[in-house]
Length: 305
Image (cartoon, rainbow, N blue to C red; front, side):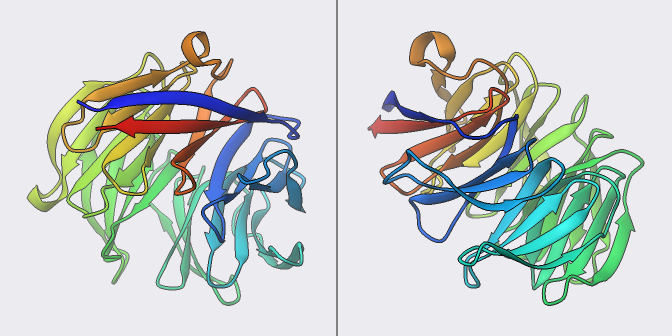
């Protein structure tokens, strides 16, 4: 069992409200953050003292998606749809009011923007001009999270009706519906080889699904005390981290699913309130966490095998 040493490097301030999203940028040491204050900031792990504002919108931002080849950022602006931002110029290029509800997650597949919305819709938009391709009403409850399979041929969407719905990206039809959790599904991640889907949510359970066995449930783990907000893999796929409303971050082995480390306030000067989002970077194995306490924390994760 590997020995993991954790050191908190820095706490980043500047946001004026709860933080809900961190998103990788053009280089491994760069990332974006956004939250309740409507501000989208760009940070540099090589010089983290000062963030740069990239965009500012009126309402909360729960979802960002970075287009690396174009250096553009899609911002999910709650109640006002999606905005396409030129990162270098810090300028909005286009916007589309695709919904009047909150947008909880954004992914891009085959030049199609997928927006998971609070009204239970999965909205498909054209990446070129943001025009709406389709609005898929999949539930009466919120669509909370999207995971794209590594082969790009299917996606998993988590809902507040406790289900995970698997859709084909060739025709956007429903392939399978899983009664997955006892409450809302907040986060989904496919393993890098696409063989496993991890899911978590309000019931604080981590579930492992065998994709190749038609999403057979492999294991259920009571992983946190309260809702699990996010799952994030290490860039090599060998480990993953979870974060929770219980204020903690936990590190797990991605093969055995054994808990390896708990990062919290008492032991590591962790967050004082809910931890909402994680980003495990390639830059010195550093992990970034975003919290309701208005701060981002940078963690040095040293794994000795």
